[in-house]
Amino acid sequence: MDKEKLNALIEEAKQYEKVSSEDLVRVFKDNHIWVPDFVDRFLLVNFFKKYVFDKEEYAKYTDEFKYRLRKYDQYFSIYLTEATDKEYNYSLHPCEYKNLFMRFFLLNKEKFNTTIAFEKALSKLKGSTDGAQENYEKVRVQFRDLFYTPKGYLDGIQLSILKEAVCKTYTLNQIRDLGAKYGVNVPKRMNKGQLLELIAARFRLTEDEKVALQPKPILELTQYSKEKGFKISTDLKKGDMVEFIVFSLNKYNEDIEKDLFDYDFIPEEEEVDTDPEKVFEGVPEDEVEAQEIPTTNQYVEMETPVEEEKAEPVVEEAPAEEEKVEPVQEEPVVEEAPQEEVKEEVVEEPVQEEVKEEVKPAPAPVEEHEERELEYDESVDVEIRDIIKDYYKKKSRKDKALRITILIIFLVLVAAVAFFALKYFGVIK
Image (cartoon, rainbow, N blue to C red; front, side, top):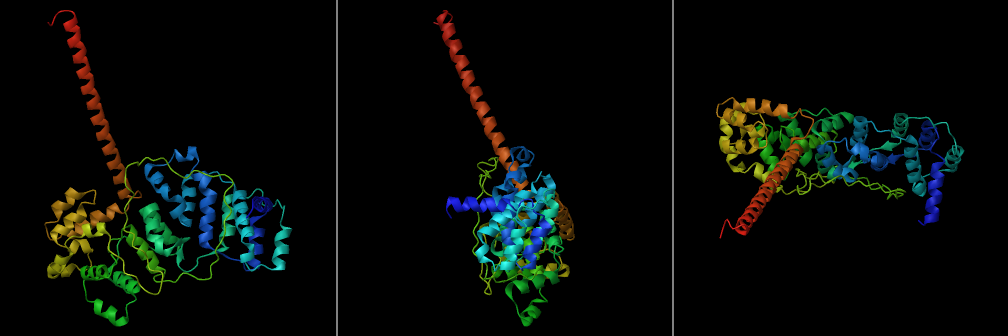
């Protein structure tokens, strides 16, 4: 599109900025024009961009949130974008959202099945100022009805990258809130029945195959799943929580709709810098267990990530312990694994010394589970916090080494000056 047409489109969109959102949305709904929610995500991310990255607002953020903002354009979903606004209470201009929506629609109008009646109804609203005093909450409530969730997507994110997106941008509590938005109560841990149903849905098991797995303890169920390329735990970490939400919404192996338009988007008139301060310079990207969620009818086996193998290095020895732990089948996988494997898992917990002392007695697995459940009530992700701590520890060591080096150089210089002074005055010959 040439610059002249682009400017004309922008000017036309401005005529709808002060139109009542209720009247504007009604025209679309009456003519059965609906928009997929990945467009909604795009509009929200771009609408909030200049507010989220405002210098004064940015200075208020924690290091953890600044770290997550590195994935703002790519991975922030609809819920997370709106939750960010609720937390920081930005001073929004709702007319800008209406302008952005109309710019998108006018650019793609030919791809929608519009009618002459729709064109006339929309044209009548031009220049209206009935919605000039609307706040953003009212505008958002009205526009939300225009968007639908297409197959293969959730909260504006494609299922194939949903786990990675959520793990890199959400806290544990926010994942539970995402589930609540779609009617899913995400537990802290699954029971055996839920685990079996999830595995059956993931691999499309027949009823006979489910019956064959029913007598198996949790350890064998998780081992069975891992051998087929999918790691899951009854103690729900971030990736497991995403899997539970997708399973609960019956979105496993869901085909992406083929009739979606290839939409065009008008670039912003002013570029907004979305590159946060490099407070983690030199620190590698946060590693997550980001196995893709299958979105086609055919399951594609995933290779187990290297870090996952480190977490469970002795899986071959697990069956040997089966008879000893069979009375507590409902306990998490880690609790039923050999002693060496438990030590590997405990390294990740903030209360590692206390857990190691309690692993030796027989009832220790239950107490270990109780300690771990307390961890999942924290709103700030432990993984990111550890990255920050490691970063500042390394920085402190470097600063200390630099100070020592400078002190040594200074002392050498002082000694040299003293030597030549004494020699000059004849004290030393």
